[in-house]
Length: 329
Image (tube, rainbow, N blue to C red; front, side, top):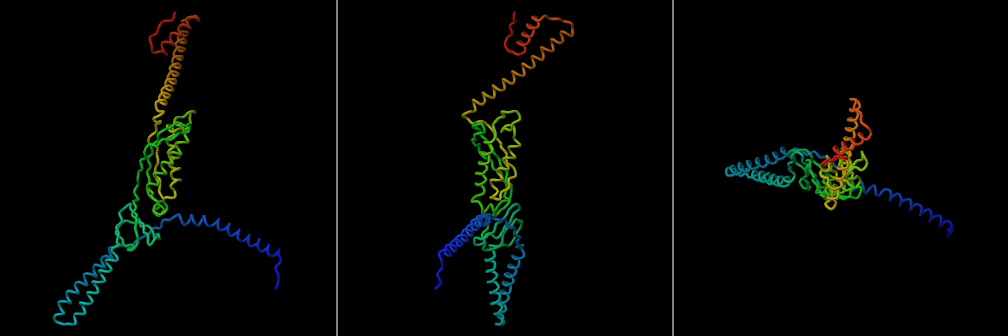
């Protein structure tokens, strides 16, 4: 017997280890992609045949068999050979009833903006979106789905905006089903799924922006409605792509401070408005006083420096204060 050296055994083991490792790597690279392909359903459109012709054929066989049976019974009394017609008509009635019972589950009516998903023993057959009266698969399980536009009106959600202040945001989402296979087989309940994802999307967008702009021109929840609504729609589309739902529109409907800070924030807004108003009043009063002094000079009225100072003080007090004016001596 030939003996294998230790080095050859080690080389074989190393080669085997390299092969096993590469196979594991290839399996690890392929399995996730295969799993994703299996888990993600793809809609297939079915076109069924018109059921009116099939139902007419079944009814025609049934009525012809009845007529033949009645005629055969009447003629059997005169000639026994017509008993064969009774047997044939009975067989025809029997088969017509069997066919009618078996095919009754296959007749289906589909209204406009409605889809029917067929599932046969756990296998997805396809989706029918044509409206009318059709004959499909009698033994298959069906799911009826509405293709109309739906609207989700979310309740107010409390979100901490970018600066940490609690705000309450309301959302409205207009959506409809685009891919029926994904909506049925890839998510547990597409209606509750869109509700949860809409709340998650508005929380995500609400945390990125302040309630009011701190820097002039800054995007905020109150001022940047169009930009924020577009970002909200884009974020929501990204989150629900797996469900096959189409987002037609998504908007923030209500914006307000949280109840715990609403009073303080209203005081802050009132103080800011007062400061801006005072600033505008002072600028307007200064322009009015300077124009009046210019008019004095144009008309040849000369005032000393003390008279100008007294005039400016009295005019500024008159224009900038709302209380009773007292002459300054």
